[in-house]
Structure formats: C-alpha cells, structure tokens
Image 1 (cartoon, rainbow, N blue to C red):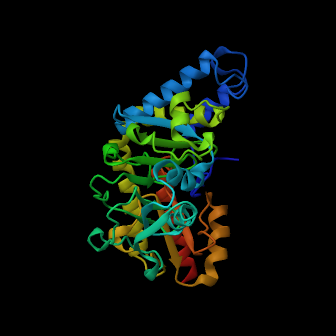
Image 2: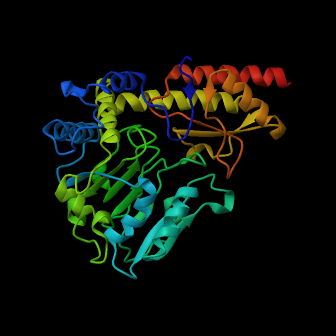
Image 3: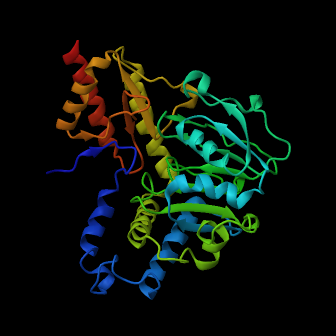
Length: 360
C-alpha cells in the first residue's frame, strides 16, 4: 500500500526520509549489530545521539545558554502538574489563559496545587478566538502565567507572545513547536509533547530557564522535578530511547531543510491555501476568527452535517486520513504539521472541491 496523506492531530506524520532512515537502522544501528531500541541509554553511542539531538534543537530554536533542555516522559499532560509543582509554592496564585480544551485541562490540574486565576477565557464563544491581552485580569503576585499558544482541537492560535514583565511565562507548545522561529528568551518554561512536530509519542520536550530549576516544592517526587532531569542529562531513569533517537533525526532533517525560517514560509503558505479554499466555498466553513486561526490545525464544517460520514469514508478512499474532527467539537480537522507536504494540502483541496461538486 502506498503512503497516505496523514492529517491526524497526533500521533502525526513523520517525514518520509526520517522513516526511511529508521527502517534501515532498526536491524543494525550505527554498526552496533543491535537496534537502537536494544542499546544501553548510557552507552557512548546513545549518549552521542542524545547530545546531538539537544544541540540540533538548540540550534533550531536559538536556545540561550542559560536554559536547560530536558527530555522527559508523560506527555504534555504530565506537565500540567509538573509546572505548578516546579514553579510555585503551596497556595500561591498562578495565572492561566483559557482558550480551549488543553488550556482548560491544564487549569483543572493546576487547581490541585495552586490558587488559579483565569486571566482571560474565550469559552463565551466556544473557544473560537484569543482574548486581547489588554482585557486580561492578571494577578499582581502570580508565580507564573501559563498559556497554550496553539489549541490543537479548536484550531485557535495566538498571533503574539504575551508581555508579562518579570513573571515567568509558561507555554504548552505541543502543536506549534518547530513550526516557525520563536524567541525562547521570552519564556520561563516551554514544553511540548513529541507526537506532532517532534517525533513519535513517548517523549516530551521541556526547555526551562535555569534560575527556575531551584523552585520545586520539597514534596515534589524526584521524577517530576525539572532539576533532576537537568542534573542527570534526562537519564535519571531509562528514557524512551527510540523516541529520543527519532526526534534527533527530525531535528537534523529540519536543519537540512533550512531551519525554522524555511519551515515558517512553507507552513504559512500551506495554511493560507487551505483557509482560502474553505473561505471561498459556501459548502465549507471555519468557525475561528481570522486573527486567531492556527497554522497547524484547521477545523472545518460541512454545510450539511449529514454528509460528514460520506466525506470521511471517501477521503480515506482517496488517501487522505485523519480528517475526523475531535469528538468534542465534531466536523473535520486537518492537522498540517511540518511533515505534511504541500502536495497533501493540494490533494485535500482538490478532494474538497470534487466532493462539493458531487454533493450539489
């Protein structure tokens, strides 16, 4: 069977050239006579892989020297607890912006450990916009401010980095990391699950400013402390070596493609094409305000919801998979991360046009 265009929100597509390298490496990696999944994480061969992956990521994002790069487990969801445990004292106030399902889940978890102040909330319009910062109701003494730059489910994206002064800014970048350049120095902590733009599920990237490493509560379990990962090179226990290895291949691939400036140009073009096709049709619509639309996750609704099942079955037959919208919102969603080629966008637009014509 030939490769399909995979529009899944995650686990998402991985570049074909990376998959080819993985395929060739599996029986005999790096002339070790073993798969990368079979070598010790403390072997010189794997330590070199881990070091290169970190350096390539630092190069891609321009990570300053006063930040630690951690490779943890538990997905971004575990970070919903790790952030408050590492950055706030018991009973301290923390600020959160609620713009969709994932920021809402982060708020729910943080409430177990902190006094959460929701500074802004777009639930009043079904999470279809980003509240302007001038309307936010921030705390004077918040330990940090947390936001989700891109909401994977609703397809809502911040067009700005919040200005929070000296308050540490914490960002869940799971579905936007590596899609364009960012100024890491604006953040206290950035975290991202791997399974969208980094590699296979199983590893989680955390970038943390070093002055924040000492702020964890004494009661925080060792494997939930950022400082423990920083001190051990993310090898306090056995890490997910396969996911780390593939992530390193993806970082190298992105550097070879011209880095994040090049990816930003491609990603903006892909998203603009798809939104133009949706906006130019009476058959499809996108519910998100134009100034808050995501480059990475594009939800769209058919004029007649009774046709959803037919659209999905025929799209799969056409080699376009993963288009079903999240169960909480319905409709369709095209996730168009870095590994989605522009040819996939063109194929989807053609299919959408043909389906509309056939349904008229």
